[in-house]
Length: 179
Image (tube, rainbow, N blue to C red):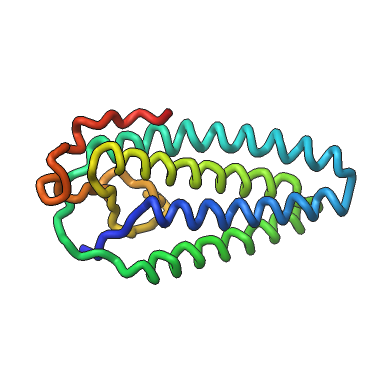
């Protein structure tokens, strides 16, 4: 088993990186074409993508994963520098793919909306995890695995710091509903 890492930190870093990428592509779209059309398309993209990601990925999968999280099987924690490196790698790959899609589509509007919406969803998820940690007196952790079939939000990879070592409030008493 790999050392455990904080999904709160990872999702926040990736989220803000994708927000910056999406905003940059949105500015390019506004400058290179009709700004009103770019703003409207970007707004619809953010709302639709954000809503879909929050509902399907965050609300269901991560809510279930956090609610069913087992006690952490190890006290080993990943160095924060590795979390930063993994988040930076993910963000750089996203930027490259979205720039390539912008070139293929002939416009950066759609990739900007997708990237910005996903970034907002990840940043919101990070804030939700932080609130859950604070309310439950636990630290939510995950094994930093990633694969195409499982992704970065796999149910089996989430753990909580052993509540008996951190706080007398067990994680099961904290509702796992997203606001």
